[in-house]
Length: 437
Picture 1 (cartoon, rainbow, N blue to C red):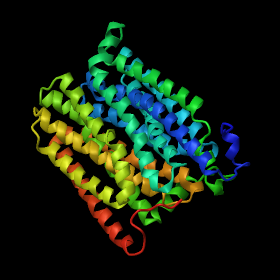
Picture 2: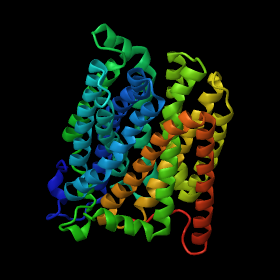
Picture 3: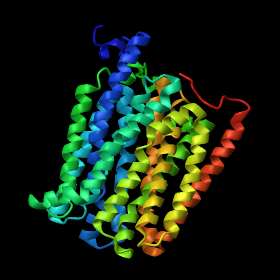
Picture 4: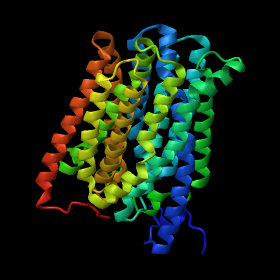
């Protein structure tokens, strides 16, 4: 069979795909995204693992350290919808590629911050890294574009899982390998981690540009000929979300899953180091376990979501969020096991929440509107994550890490209540497992 290319289903030449062509394109898409996610995930986490530590090293201020770490979510929020607009106009490939390239520039700015000790370069650089984070997250939707409805969450989970290899490995070696290697090359503390991140983002951009052909969104028929056919303005996209009860709870699930994970995780390394007196290696292992919770079980979560439905998995996410928040709040600062288990739970919560919410949001709208709607949802998610990260530093500085973690538990309860209310409202009118095309 002749190799598929973007001309098979462009905006002007779209024709229905045979099942064989669709399966062929989906397999190539998944393989390409798996490789790019490994590079993007490691590029993101290898630097992000040390953001708060570098900021504290430069300024000695916990609030500024929290702000620097939160800049990642700010950047992701700023980039999410513009990247989605690029995708709605031209396909997934240019949006993902551009996000990774901006992330590479941001990581290099963070290297300059470590060298020059000019603090402003760090949050600006981390904001640009946020575009790489937005691209990493958007890749889950690219995996769903050509997936069969009954396997959509599984496809999303598979791509989320791919980040395990990069993010988990990056968190484990950032402080123990990349930073010491950078010092041997003459870079200051934490410079080696960010330099590696920049190079890996470049690799992710190259892989997407080379391998993500044919473009899955183009083949799925998700590229419209006009603004009215898919490239929705942000206000219109948000209006569609707010008018749809399923979309509302899906975006709320993404926001709470992201916000609680970012808020607690951002300040936990400083809490372990300054209050608990724990070592860099212990912090590195905690981050590794946390990231394993986020990504390692994603294929299983995806299969469960396809099998039992989106609402039950969102409900589980809320319950685990409550447990993780309480565990972090009541674990002593010097308790490596207690804090690590709590952060592992918050990682699991993120996995359940993001996969179930992404599937529910995708299935709530027709294919031509999905890229813009997904971008608006990701903007809300990243924006709430940014607010959580910023407020985390202020909460810990003015109150305590205990109060920060209790806030995460309270948000978990909000999600539980919202999911139950929406689920009960839909139960008698709609099928439990959504599988619309």
